[in-house]
Length: 393
Ligand SMILES: NC(=O)c1ccc[n+]([C@@H]2O[C@H](COP(=O)([O-])OP(=O)(O)OC[C@H]3O[C@@H](n4cnc5c(N)ncnc54)[C@H](OP(=O)(O)O)[C@@H]3O)[C@@H](O)[C@H]2O)c1
View 1 (cartoon, rainbow, N blue to C red):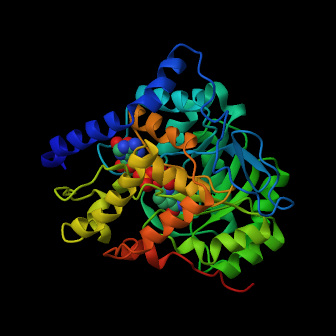
View 2 (tube, rainbow, N blue to C red):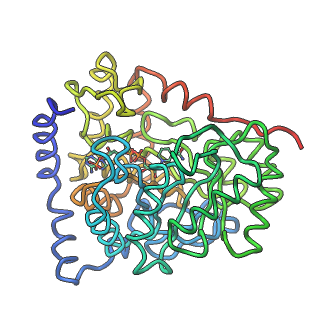
């Protein structure tokens, strides 16, 4: 990536200049302790509530995942753990980012046992300690991780593994309850009823308050929800990965479950952080992503350019348009962009001020649909664990 840095810096400067008004205003006010929450006037798209009874009414600037109130945008932890570049960030910087995020109205912080592994939960635990009771900590179980070496030994949602994972998360997060605990991937060897039953026990013990599934099969969602109602589904969703729209979002709507898009910015692609000169070094996860290979980037950039055109119309950056578009889908969709950079954080939060009318949404979607995207949604190993149905009990 090093040879790419200048190029990226150039485009970053362009991008930032392009819409600096928005977030400079916010940050200056925030610095002076005068800023209204950027969420305080959640504007326009401001989505029609299609199923008010199941999806609890919105408060201004907030959204509901099931019955859990969160900010309209969350913060993902993969960037600060150095999943993409640079290794785990200095704790002082992590504290600064998370605390700035909180000051700006973000109350949903997403992490997982395997981010690091173990490292991101510790980073988050320290960063949010001063205001822990005021935020929603979302973490994930579902892998067998060697506690000494951190080696990930495979998918594992046996009840004893869930318990071990939850106890570890509580310690690392410096808390006595997890607000939202997700199964990271469906375990093809463990009936979901057993997972839901274990979660119920942990809820009775006060250790977990809400639960969710990540990349589950649809039947598994219904079975899990029947035992213990789900609060959120967390799946990949962004302008080039729109498959949740076909079946998962309608199912969430039917059951009153919230939806949390992961990789909402396409690993930074829709934040203008990747271009035709980008090359990813060995060990950088992006090196195995089919849509950002040297062969596929030039064609796929058409989608970024399209989003940037909309940015020109709406005085916004590509990342802001992308996040606002996700938020405009449903009032219970809450993207969790990941960042290790405070300027990016402020830029992303600016999405809360951008709205789409339903005509604009239709027009935007029609344009997206015309752009051919080359390469599979994700790396093969990631995709085989998506949409898995748990075995029958
Ligand atoms: N459930 C699951 O299986 C699953 C899988 C993957 C991720 N997740 C969760 O979802 C969160 C979001 O996904 P993600 O972090 O992988 O991908 P993402 O949010 O789509 O993109 C993150 C990348 O974009 C860059 N970026 C963010 N904002 C930017 C901006 N305004 N300008 C330029 N670059 C920007 C970040 O770099 P900088 O640090 O330089 O800003 C980082 O490299 C994760 O952090 C994690 O919490 C869940």
